[in-house]
Structure formats: C-alpha cells, structure tokens
Image 1 (cartoon, rainbow, N blue to C red):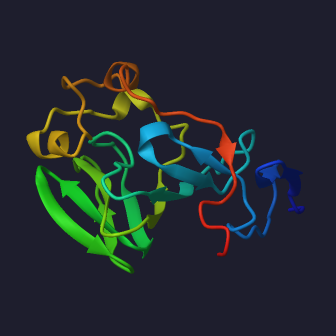
Image 2 (cartoon, rainbow, N blue to C red):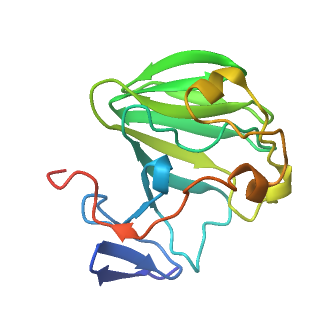
Image 3 (cartoon, one colour):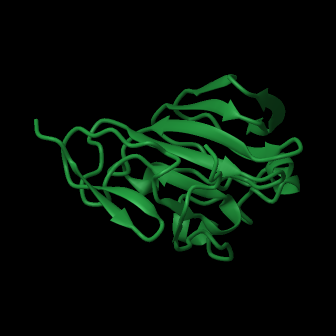
Amino acid sequence: MSEARIDDTETGRAVAGDGWFVLNLSEASWERKGEFGVRCRLEAPDARFPHFGLNVHVLAPGQPSSLYHAESAQEGFLVLAGECLAVIDGRERALRQWDYFHCPPGTRHVLVGAGAGPCAVLMVGSPRSASLSEILYPEDPVAARHGAAAAHTTRSSKQAYADRSFTGPPQPAPWPDA
C-alpha cells in the first residue's frame, strides 16, 4: 500500500486519495456542520474508508451532533475533551472526558455539547456506504428539549433535516493552539 497524498488547502491539510497517512488534527481541514458543530473527517472525500467511518466532532455547549436517530450498525463515541450529554433511548446521560459510549445497532441516540466550553468526540461507525434508509429518526420529547429531534418520525434524512442547517464550508481547526 502506498502513502496517500495530503494537500495543503486554505483551511488546512486534507487527505487526497487512497493509502496510509499520518495527519495532525490541529493542521487538518475541518467542515462546519451548520447548527451541528464542526467535524474533521479522517478520510479523503473520494476514498472513504471501506470498513468504518471515523471523525472527530466538536460541539459547543447546547449544540447537538445530529438529530436523534438509530442506525442498523453499531457506533462508538469517545469524549476526548470537555463534556456532553448523551440522549439514549429517551434518557439523558452525562459524559465527560475519556467516557466511551458504545451504541449497539438500533440504539436511539444523539450527543449534545454541555459544560462551560467545547466538547471534542471521536466518533466511529459504519462507512457512509451503508444505506441511509436504514436510519430511523424518531420523535422524542427529551431530544426535542435539546433541539435534536425530527419533527415527525421518519426514515428519510431529507425529511428529518428539511428545516435544519447541516452543511457549511471547510474551516481551520476549531482550536488553533492544539
């Protein structure tokens, strides 16, 4: 296996292509996810990892990582810094640095930034090649209190996020002194 190319962009370094690589996240390009924080994908857009998806997501206090949902594959979440709140099957659970949340298939969940500052979470899941129709976005009063629930239960991500801002331009790392 050859080494992947890493390009310098105006917002940081980005993996370009297949292969092994080493990338420092403080130098990486991050993507703004609208009202859902910022994230750094650790794979090239045209060369997604075939066996798992991996990113670091940074949330401000009160900011959800996505909408409350359940997937057909397992996921894992490791809090690297700060604090967040996990809404799991309609219940709140506080998470702090070094807490790991294992999410078996079918577990309804969302993370919401908490505490006094940003929260950084390493997220691992199935590759995006998994069918989006296998994701359930259920209504939930607890997630809704945090602005993190779909208006109506659906399996359509387009319907779930219809009135949400979920995309944005790349940006430099959210912590310049990392």
